[in-house]
Image (tube, rainbow, N blue to C red; front, side, top):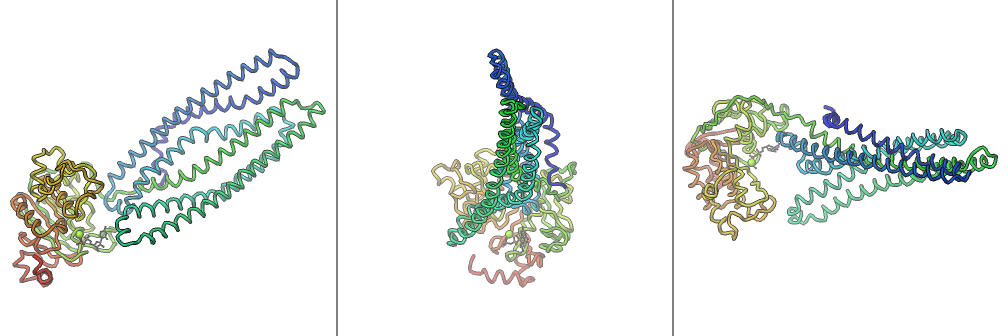
Length: 577
Ligand code: CTP
Ligand code: MG
């Protein structure tokens, strides 16, 4: 898909307003173009022939034309602002929606923090371009060409000078665009780089400080900054040659007009007013050319932004979202079957993360998954809510292939506590209510009690109304994990997935949660991922994972007999219970 295709929709929607604005710009420019001619008439007829009535009437005409021009300019501004604001907000909305629809694989590809810049800065740049397109960008070429025509029309003798001046200016513009375009693009890339370095530093500021890597980060920033400086200087140097050389050419033209005109006036061939008007038109040409250059700069920036926005729109959602999915009855059963499942983050042909997984979790059962770090535990459980697509085999919930179930309905039945607790800005109450929007305060407290979070929450002066900072920064690791568990439990899901979410909780508290969960979990299917044997000890079934496959499966006692790896894990953790 072409990067620019996403703009098509807005083009269809706004072309009428665009042309309306163009019409008003034309009126405005025409008014601007008429002024010098009227001035020349006032001088050549009114002043030369001493006719005050003529001066007055032409003066009144000038006022009228100026007023008309101002009116047209105001209307055009209103249209341009309205269209660009609407366009910007729609584009932002569409982009946001698109990001919501992206699969996890797409988001992995795009890098989360850059999505923020795309939504904000990039959309702004494009919006700015649209605004300037409807205002000065339309006016500049009209003014330039109009001035040329008016000048030739006014006095063909003087217009001979334009034959020399115009090609030189055109040549200058072509050269500058050829040389300048890549330079401005380089400035944009360098600016993006500075932003990227800054973003990474700010999001990892704690780690940077902890590892005393400030100097390293500073050097990285300095390098990016220097690059930006270098590129900017290059671009500005070009600008600093370009603007004066155009001005010089135009001014040379004006000198020639004065000289030729002076000779003409002496011989009586040319009138003084014509010379003044002619110089006026040449100045307008100069002004419009300068504007062209400004727009050009604008355009280069917006182009980079359009490409970055287009990249998001281009993301092909690889998940096969069938709109009319099989109507899934949310009966609280929650059987899970993995049938010969293989999976790779890179899709078919990528490095295999999971291979030939067969596992069944029956309703009411608790199944433990244990294995070394990197064994593929998280990858396995992330397949159940269909965060990623399997590369082979089937994942079934209640006997139905999950690709046939409406993802919304599927996820409604599942509560997942991720390995890294993610909390949001807001109160503790709000955060737990994420699991169930209309939960009462009692329900929230009940869930918090199950997750052994109630006690620490009420120990805060503001209790459940304690405000959490971004990502829950004002909580300990274990507190965060318990809130994340409460948020999942409040949903009363059919399937509960706990992905190593008690790793930061001490054994005593974990034991409390386990006890509380015992009864709760008897109603649903529970998958518990763990590193610690103690977490999964009482499970109905424990699957041992190694290098992306399940190498043994059974109860604790069975595994002690059958699995060497399991015995090794138990050995290594003995005494830690
Ligand atoms: N992986 C990947 N892309 C991701 C996430 C993981 O390529 N977005 C790879 C990892 O490099 C790892 C493998 O997938 O080799 C399994 O990762 P994971 O399922 O997260 O392992 P866990 O068993 O959950 O490890 P841990 O106990 O450390 O959480
Ligand atoms: Mg994991």
